[in-house]
View 1 (cartoon, rainbow, N blue to C red):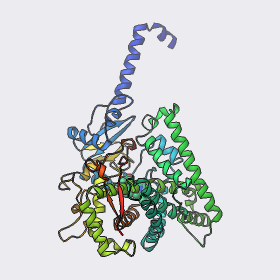
View 2: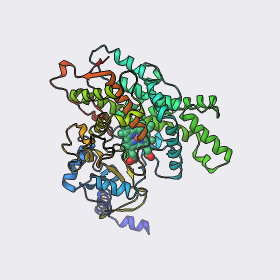
View 3: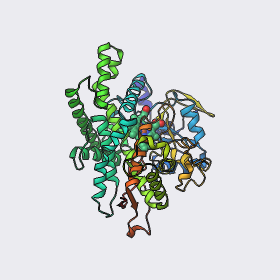
Length: 503
Ligand code: HEM
């Protein structure tokens, strides 16, 4: 029968069938699934990638929103994605339907990095995710709050001070010194030890993040077009090797901890995780399967990934913005002098007493918006949002940058203005509408409280001890430019600054 059919087809019929099939495949590939909001026409295979990579993603989203409104959909390679470009939509999704919107997309890189989704940041909502978030939250609170947090941060200040003093008033880019401080704080919390400046191990962690950011900042081809994983290009191979090295280095720390572990003397975050594992084994609890060595390594990996670059970049912005606004910097220094004095470093407890400094810190978080589109979510099931029915597994991005610069929430949003965070009586507005640098809802940043306290202490210490200024040769034109190679983080390109000791 089949033979008869084939023999009866002439060449033109076969061509017609092939062309029809290709048109159908093309149509299926680019046509928007029912229920999704409108958006620009997608191309076969690449979807809207070409137009989305013309400039920073958050700016491209803003341009599309002008035509299609604040909720629209785009196709990123083979995945459909909805963009929420204002606060109300973000609340409708992340606050009113926290579970439905608490998934994460599955991509080639996240799967490889998380060794099969055994981490916190890239796994969708699940009992394992809940368990790890809870354990890690408790551990961070134990090692990095109150007096312990003060000690943790104060312990690295002499090193930071030395690095800044060594510049001897010459122009330099502060990113490295700030980065070393931030990495050392996390290393002390997680590993129980810090590194001296120039230690190759420390440089490894820093370089890794830099390399991964520049190589994966905008994603690997296989993240968007999954079948490309079978044809890895040179960049993908380089990234996989970097990730292997990262796992190996973390593995060495885990092994060293296993050898020195003493349940009576839990010294750091890794020990804390090991204690949870030990308890689960002793109880014969079902949790054991979620507390394997890979899970523990992945939790530490997440903290080192999520907690270093974001904080360093925020402080990098801080120094640049303060140098650009000497009158604001002077007010911060004056307030710190008046309240804290010069005989001790600022501490967590000073937070309520330094309203101008704290307002400056929040304004810096708004103005820099280091995570302009946050971390991508995915729908866990078909879910209604406004007039739309968003299918399961759709990617979801909130344009935090659009919200942080929305005139509905901020007067003169393009101006760096600490007053955005001060009320009429000079008190700090802790949670103004339209401020979500750490996102919100079920997946809110796990390190939010720690990051705020850490940035507060480092920020106020920097201006207690130094005056940062634009070098005279750059005064005419000191521009802050985004480093576009880093994709999802609003990093600044290198800039030069002068640090002058105040006393
Ligand atoms: C300025 C500093 C920081 C900023 C702006 C920031 C911002 C964010 C944002 C926007 C998210 C995504 C939330 C979402 O998916 O809706 C996130 C997630 C996360 N952050 Fe942070 N973060 C910072 C510092 C930290 C620190 C210091 C740590 C830990 C030590 C940390 C740990 C995490 C983790 C583990 C997640 C994943 C949470 C999850 O998927 O459930 N972050 N952060």
